[in-house]
Length: 146
Image (cartoon, rainbow, N blue to C red; front, side, top):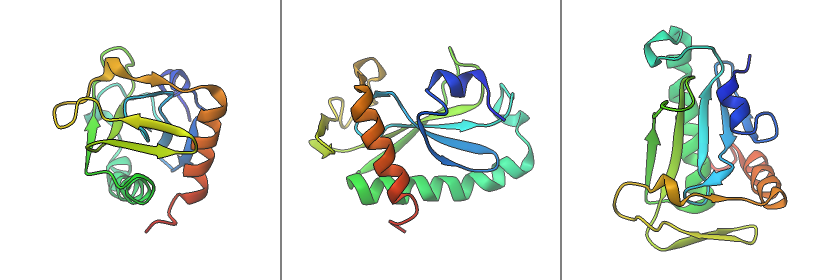
């Protein structure tokens, strides 16, 4: 199942990894390098509306996200933001945080708001080729970094 929020963030082209209740998407506008969207694959518009199985699966999904991003980017902190102000379906913006900059596949980004809250308005839209390379890299290395 998919929803409009997932499609807004580029699904299916942005899909990094698929789970029964969740989809991990590469965020087209990168707040920091490696920014993801963790989207519920339901029509729920409130966190408490998700089925119990989605909450149980969330533990494994977040472990996978953190292991992959740590292996790829050596982040120092990670932020999970559930905003749902514009895009109504349950989803998190997953933003790896780090002092300085990180580079992957010829894309270099600095965490310009470190150590404060992430600045979502400073997000950088990736070119299609860079988006594809980064998504492919994360897909290839998903779960390998455990």
